[in-house]
Every structure is written in structure tokens, then in C-alpha cells.
Length: 240
Image 1 (cartoon, rainbow, N blue to C red):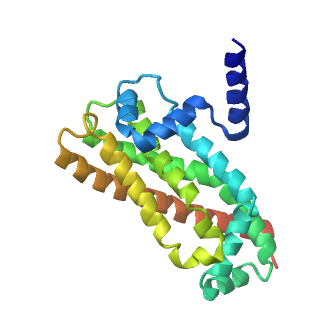
Image 2: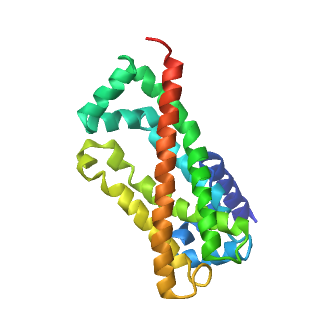
Image 3: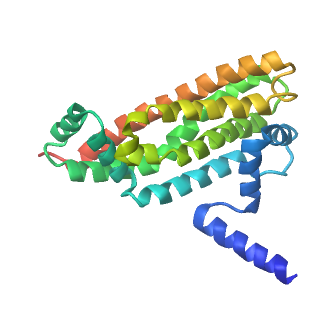
């Protein structure tokens, strides 16, 4: 009993800090290493695993905590400008009227609030594609599978955050999105059999299509978010 109480206390502390509990960690581990078990559980509407959208928001919480070590979204944006094309940095300096620090602070605030909402919203559109792949799946099952694939890719993206932060990784920063797409592809490919595909060939084709569609939705969300964050930052800055 004492060990169980300690386990529950530790689980509660982890969940309070990061939005995770032990079931969330099990769900994430199985999405990475045994996604078919998770997909089948979601399809059967069982409660063996944490709802994927909750898991993904927990990962966003961890991402925010990690990014805060380097100044949050504003700090990440500054490092990208410093390590990237000087012309882009000059463009933002002109847009902000020479008030780049204040601009980036407001930009980071908008990114922090808007990222989980917009990415989750755009990603949820992939449930229509999943409905075509698996016509017998409920809407909630499709949403959980979609967010589960996103969560697996987001965890990989979290591990790749140093490529956005440290200048020594700037030359290979282009590879990070490709690795995330590969994570989407492999998660779907290994999770689809018996749930979204009846044959190995079907699983490969659907995994390829779904990974591209999901990445396109994430990129579209990023473009919209960047525009919204820029407009918000300029609004907060006011006239020069």
C-alpha cells in the first residue's frame, strides 16, 4: 500500500509539472514502439491509453518548458534569425521599425498561445482522410489516431530542438522536418495493419499519403500562425 501511495504521489507530481502521468508515458512509449496496439485500442474505443489529444498537449507543455530555457519562442526566433539568412533578419528589423526585441517578445507570446490551438485544429482535418482509409472507425477513434501520429512526430521534433537553437547544427536544420515526416510515416505504417489497412501494400501506400498530408497540414498551420503572430506583434507595437 505504501509503495502504491508513493507511485500515485509521483505520478501526480509528474502530471502537475508536465501534463503527464504514467499512463501517458505508456501511451507515448507504445506509440513509438508498438503503435498497432494503440491504434487497435483507439479503434475499439477502449480506455487502455491516454486520449491522444491530451498526450499531445502534454508534449507541448514539455516543449514550452524546454524552450523557456533558451528564452521561449522569442529566444528561439532570435536564434533562427541570427543563424539564418541575414536578409530575413533585416526584413524583420525593418518590419518592427527597429524595435526587434519588443517585436519578438509579442511574437513569442502569440506563438505560445496559438501554436497548440492552430496545429491541433489543422491536424484534426486529417480525420476525413482517416475516414476514407477506415470507413468503420468512429470519429473519436480517428481523432485519437490522428493526434497519436502527431504526438509521435512531436516527440521526435522535441528531441531535435537543438537543431533550432545551437548554431553548430544550423547547416543540418533542414533535415529535422524530414525526420519528423519519417516519424509520421513509420508510426502510421506500423499502426495501420488491421485498423486502417488490410494488406501490407495498402499500409505502405496509406502511410505515405497520410504522412505527406499531415505534414502539409502542420506546415499550413505554421504559416497561418506566423502571419497571425506577426500581425499581433505589430498591433501591440503600435506606430513607430
